[in-house]
Length: 196
Ligand code: SAH
Figure 1 (cartoon, rainbow, N blue to C red):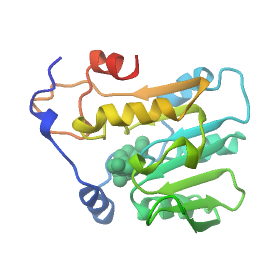
Figure 2: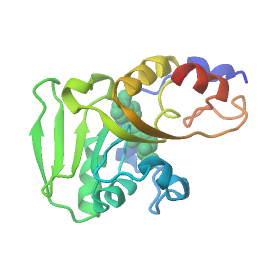
Figure 3: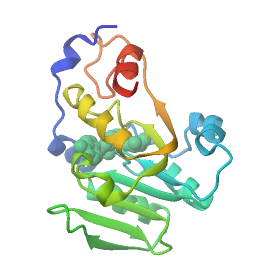
Figure 4: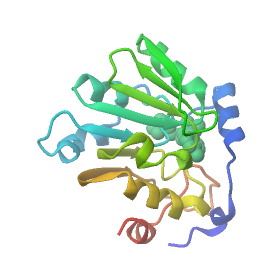
């Protein structure tokens, strides 16, 4: 389980913004992720009205799905374009406000109030800004984080979780010497050491 040459690879924020501008977003899916449907009961664990976090959210359609179920959805994404596309593609009215704690940070919130999407780097968030979460849907997030930032990412995620929370993580398995990523290959052993 060696991650080979991926260990040194860095994708900058500018490169992500460019992917959105170019429409180079093969990671975005129009249909709900089958694994979220399959493990929804594990995420909810019989509870309703949860606060659910979508790290590195893009314009994931599952945010609308969970909000329609009555949960409060919070996401974070560096691309403002992605967030605006999310609201317009679901015909959701929203308002935009600055986030005083984050320089240049903005928050886009559905008028109904149950979807709040932060436009900034995830590393600028903390529980004092966004609070803590009962559930996390991590798809295309840990695997999109630069390998050198994984420890920092995992510590932050642990910090953002309530005591009795559930974290659904989707990873991909492949030979890391054959593709440069993202998505990056994250060995099971590393997931264990990151999250305990
Ligand atoms: N989770 C989404 C998007 C996955 S692609 C989905 O399932 O479709 C990863 C996304 O993370 C991209 O949209 C990229 O713009 C965003 N991103 C990359 N680095 C980030 C960072 N440091 N903070 C917030 N968003 C980031």
